[in-house]
Length: 123
Image (cartoon, rainbow, N blue to C red; front, side, top):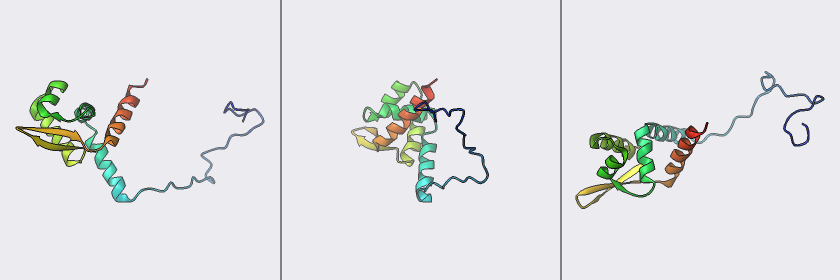
């Protein structure tokens, strides 16, 4: 390669990555149960409204009515998506007086959602 440019010079040859004699070493994978759980988590985060809920909860716990107001959707719809997030262990619910407050169980999830939103916003 030409010094630091990352481009080959005329006298250097490129390696054909499609060469049938060349095989990439397999990458070690986590146990199947972990890969399966990751798939379930990503499915739970796959709906745009659930992504919006996670983004709202990154600042702290919220009641359903606060999420309804912030997101501009109906209470039944927010509750339905919160059930999915609870069953996937993305959020937890805690009673506070007459209301239930929802909060994220893990800050890693915020990073996943923020990265996906940031990537989708790149052009």
